[in-house]
Amino acid sequence: MSNTAEIKVGGQSYDLPIIEGTEQEKAIDISKLRGQSGVITIDPGFKNTGSTQSSITFLDGEKGILRYRGYSIEQLAEKSSFLEVAYLLVYGQLPTTEEFSRFTDKITRHSLVHEDIKTILEGFPSTSHPMGVLSSLVCAQTAFYPESLDPNRSASEVDLGIIRLIAKMPTFAAWSYKNKIGQPVNYPDNKQNYTSNFMKMMFALPAEEYEADPVVADALDKLLILHADHEQNCSTSTVRIVGSSHASLYASISAGINALWGPLHGGANQAVIEMLENIKTDGGDTKKWMAKAKDKEDPFRLMGFGHRVYKNFDPRAKIIKKAADDVLEKLGVNDPILDIAKGLEEEALRDDYFVERKLYPNVDFYSGIIYRALGIPTDMFTVMFAMGRLPGWIAQWKEMRENKEPIGRPRQVYTGFNERDYVDMSNR
Ligand code: ACO
Image (cartoon, rainbow, N blue to C red; front, side, top):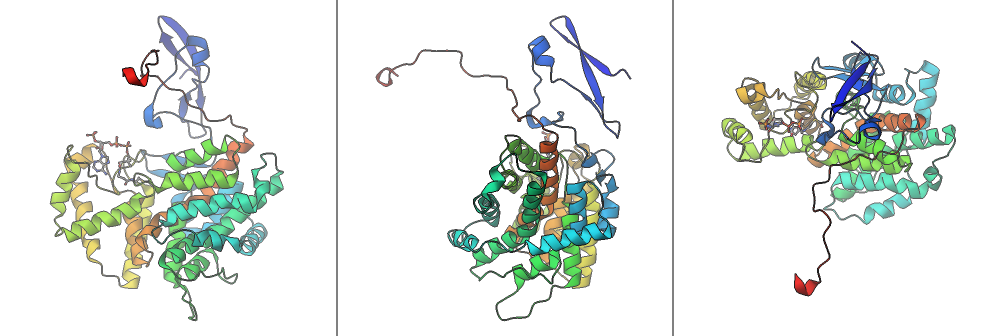
């Protein structure tokens, strides 16, 4: 294959370079096309448009492959821990024993947050969704660490900001929940590991001993690994594009949290459980809801099904389905919505509408089920996703800044009025 592509505009030919990635992915570089020919390309939803060259995550939606820094998600989920994966994503290599011990030590020591965070927290009404609180608290870090606003900080100062954010995220996440339910917050416990510490801050009650169930902590850790990065999706692209204006790490990640919140992205795990609850309340007739999902006049979609890039299976869904089965069995959970979930899954997998459109259960179909079994409340599901995705967002932000990428600024094709004269209000 030649390493240029030819495009003809109005009879004139232009040669455009083809660039190739390490997994032989090819892309036509159109960055100079407008300057040469006067035309732009258009692709709403960026369905066929790359925004960057990245060495963090490789994903092949057709083959169901997902790798972080070259390591398969299957191996990482089986053998690694969330903090090790965080190190891998942010610094590019698996840590040595010494590097990992230094990293975990720093993460543990920075988990405490400023006491004034409590005052901010108390300003939120109990009706607040924890995702809104989380994104606000993360953005508020710019006030506690104003030096983070300086785009020319040294690499070691940037690194300290990264450590602080990974360390404090479980504290913000757990506190956003405690505030919502009106309980006093728990402080981080340096004797716990990352996941158990989060669980303790979430679930411990005043004057009661709390020890995280290792089965639950392991399952949560695995879920965090599965969510840790997913190349250029909606929230990650948001982080990169906000950061491309040289906004601080905290402001960029806060924006990513908001992008993740929507039900078509990270909010799908909450939407899955709400959908299953609705089906149960409605009598549990899965066929009726399948018909609704297929009816083009009905806005209802089967939440947890379909994916922009995975068109055969979502490798994370495979791992998580097994983890869900194990945890449910070990914890002896018997939940009627599980039967509804299984029924929907079986019907969708043999239904022509879903098969033709390559709509398979995605990671969020199962993550909601497993979070529920682990005792995580529904409106915390997307917060769990955000905790998992944090190292990926950070790695992508860091890569974008280190590569000195230009500010993100798409073009458009204007379809509004041509120039017209202003008319006084009395004459309209
Ligand atoms: N239920 C019913 N029909 C669906 C569903 C669904 N869940 N998903 C897609 N379709 C149909 C569409 O109506 C469309 O049909 P058409 O060709 O007849 O018009 C076709 O499948 C293609 O759908 P698009 O929306 O064009 O696909 P896109 O790649 O843009 O969207 C998305 C992917 C947003 C994930 C979509 O499948 C969806 O809304 N799923 C439900 C929400 C969900 O689970 N989101 C989580 C994604 S995973 C994540 O963010 C971690």
